[in-house]
Length: 257
Image (cartoon, rainbow, N blue to C red; front, top):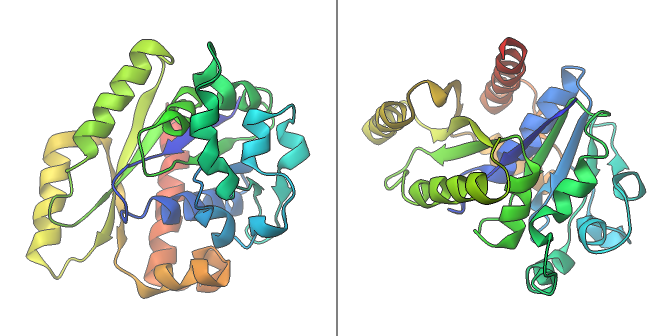
């Protein structure tokens, strides 16, 4: 059975979507069957792998709000070798529309993904930068959460709130949800601040912090605008090496578990 991993941090600009795209791509290039679920109304993950949702009649909105299944909506890509459920701005209204459901509104995504868990090795959910019903749906559907933390001042700001949300979801909807790991992003070894933030995060989360970390790298910023993961855009750059190491670490940790 596949592993469903939500990539979440409600603080913007921490590398959440970049991590979702490049982790999914890295796992795909390692020969794993991967489904990337773009669950952010901005649709950045969809655009970032060249599966622009403007031409997509069906999106993740249709999946959770209507009688469609994953196989009706998922698009198969070759570069990177993954499947994706695209998102577009129509998802923005789902939060309000979900409220009308008296029961089960937190499990709309879970019910659809549970049907395909046996087909995929990994299902990666790119969560929205908020703590509303969309995020709750992602956490309820997930087995675990990866938290990207930017190596900047106030890095842990917002993570505390996310941990409270995870705890609440555990209590109410998904008692098996665990923290998969914490990923340090935008790390710059030349700055004292990055080193201090890394120490603080490792002190706080201990062995939950990945050995791999993602450096500041201009190529990582450029790749999504070309509709490519970092592995198609520049496989030799430091960003690609870092995400390749991270994908290998995720596979290794799940093998050991």
